[in-house]
Amino acid sequence: MSLVVKEKNHVRLVFLGAAGVGKTSLIRRFLMDTFEPKHRRTVEELHSKEYEVSGATVKVEILDTSGSYSFPAMRKLSIQNSDAFALVYAVDDAESFESVKSLREEILEVKEDKFPPIVVVGNKAESGSERQVPAEDALSLVELDWNSRFVETSAKDNENVLEVFRELLQQANLPSRLSPALCKRRETLPKEQGLRPPMNKTNSCSVC
Image 1 (cartoon, helix red, strand yellow):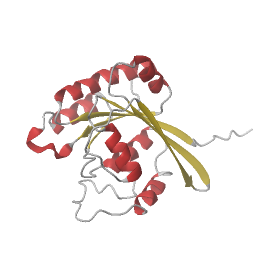
Image 2 (cartoon, one colour):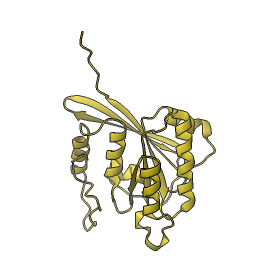
Image 3 (tube, rainbow, N blue to C red):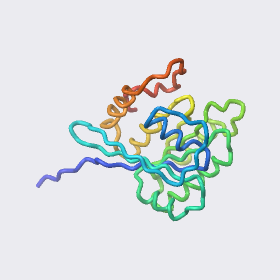
């Protein structure tokens, strides 16, 4: 008797990190291609999007969490119910990078997994001379020591934002099937004039 393995048609991605690092900005840039410079405090917000891929409906949920540590029970529940994690820090805030380390430890404990599906995101790459976290240091820790993925982004400049979601979907075992749908979504959005191209050509539909 042959066994039929049902393909995954639902995935939840959760964004975790300190307050003000740009979690909401990254999600808004991805979903709506907009950027709001003013920080707005988030408690918890769930975004849901459905994509038609190869005749099947794939539901992607994106959970935007609070940067406050006042809700430990809520954060633990978010971790338990999610398939992949974006741990976000701001490259101009060394303390927020320390928060990423603590959040990773919490994920390891809650998921009881030595190698959970994590993408570490260094946002605000446009910070220039205000940078406090060298990209080389973060890359070495995340990819060599943690065996996770690392991406630097700028939600403000729309740099490498799509790459974050592509990496998350790969971590959640939902890679190339969904990538063309993401690219199609991007093609329907208005293109900003004069925007400098992202470093890693994030509008490409290929999945490495």
